[in-house]
Image 1 (cartoon, rainbow, N blue to C red):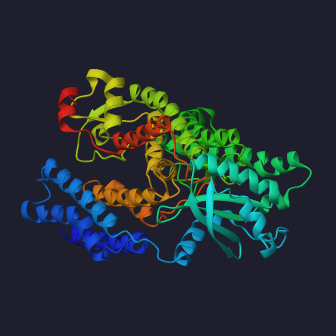
Image 2 (cartoon, helix red, strand yellow):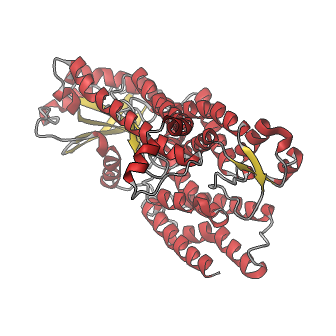
Image 3 (cartoon, rainbow, N blue to C red):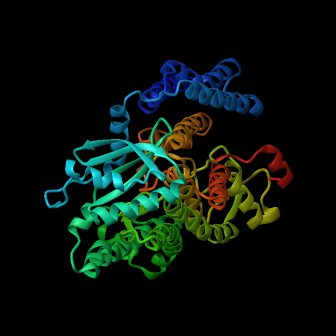
Length: 506
């Protein structure tokens, strides 16, 4: 029981710091009140355990209804006290901090800020029937134009962008954002990329992608994941002190072949995920690196893969498409790999050692989607008293589900954070990210496997980098795909309800 008190203390402290850091500046509602509302489900759970013990969990309906009421109450309190900036200085500083990744001053930058004599030219770029400029603020690396929007956001941005380019060429990037008061405003920042462009774009692209480095990391990761796959396949390696025996065993073709199924399955999933991002970014003419794998000789054999985008994202549509392409592409390749692996896995008895992260005895009911796929692959072999001894390919597929769920968490600069940002805007995305972090912390009370995940998300910033046109909303089709992505996250991380388990006879 001491563990739960310590965990409650740490959870309470982390939640208070999270609320104070994230929303204290944009709502008048007292931080302690918001904190108390968020902590109510955890306090209820701890109180139940003190009264009835850990072996008797609280009724699911009671806990979920309390969770829903607290989230709704938190939202009402937050909106009730939402702070509207009285002066533009505070809002400017907040928005400038969000746009900072795009503004990268350099000694080589040859662009210059707007001079006072150019203000007339700047005002002429904003027709009164499109966007009536009321105030222009000059900052060291930005010019902020505030006023009233008089037409559709997409039309306004495109027309004013055309006017800015006609007057000032490619000196500036035009950013269109929504302030905390709900009013959109324009920001002009120096276009440092245009200032650094050379006459050899093909050579610049070659230097950006660095295919030699990408190939080297790919081969290194293939080696490290194969070595981990050998261990997952059950091959006992000699002690590390016997270097000769270790090398002889590792270079045995029969041994390496046993490690390749896991390695190829996992790298196919990770590579497809990043290729989804990369190809979609190229579709939108965004400069980005090739996917780079991160090899490690332990753990899973890799820490994943990543790409870096070196151009600003033009609008929320592009932000959404690039963000969702990775998880969807990775999930599509994960499904056949996982189903094949599950079909070739062994069914073992359900014991106390059966846990979510134990590939030798994994309880499929810890995940709704995993349980459904396991029943599909194994049929009547899977019963209520069954666990899974995963085939190496199934381990890779299961990790693919974990990677998909992790990336779809709607927090900060994760893919899920980008998705909700594109769907609902920056302000609402911050609130959704806050709620998601708290929900995962609460889930870790009953599923300790999520504790490390929840702690990592606590230290992840909620503010996402804005697109150039960060005001124009998505179409209905993309909203549906975004809701599908969030539903996919839910069915991966939530356990199988007992009613469905009874129906499936597992």
